Image 1 (cartoon, rainbow, N blue to C red):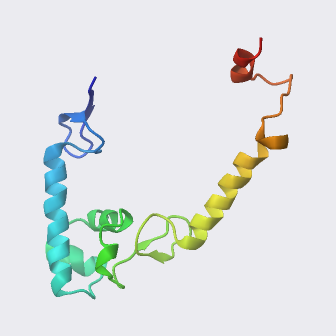
Image 2: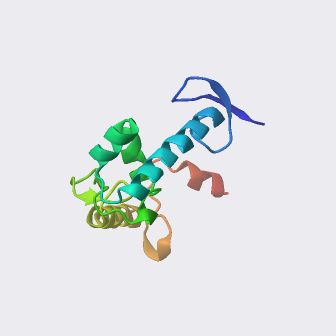
Amino acid sequence: MSELRNCPRCGNLFTYRGKRVCEQCVAEEEKDFEKVKEFLKDKPGATVLEVTNATGLDQRKVLEFIREGRLTALGLPNLTAECEQCGAPITSGRLCPKCAEKLKREIDGVSGSHHGRGGEKEYNPGKMHTADRLKRP
């Protein structure tokens, strides 16, 4: 069964197939990306501001291409976004390597703290454990 969604970009109803926007908006985003890519072929040292001024695209769109990692293969040192945690310049993704590692350690610490000996969850009769109760005879 197909899932219907409203496109967050244009509002049209579309059949969701793993893309966050409708097919028409995907095509428009590809055109926008090609504009950026073509401009950067001629001016590889351009900044985000220079790209937006030359292409007429919104700065958020160019930053989105950077965060998605679509522009990193072009090796552009001046085309950076900011780490969403600390503000350091990054060339792809949402976090700098330092903040990404810190987040990974925090997640590992939280997920590891819920397990007892041998990786099994400890049973605490004072708390509700629905999944555990379903498994017990």
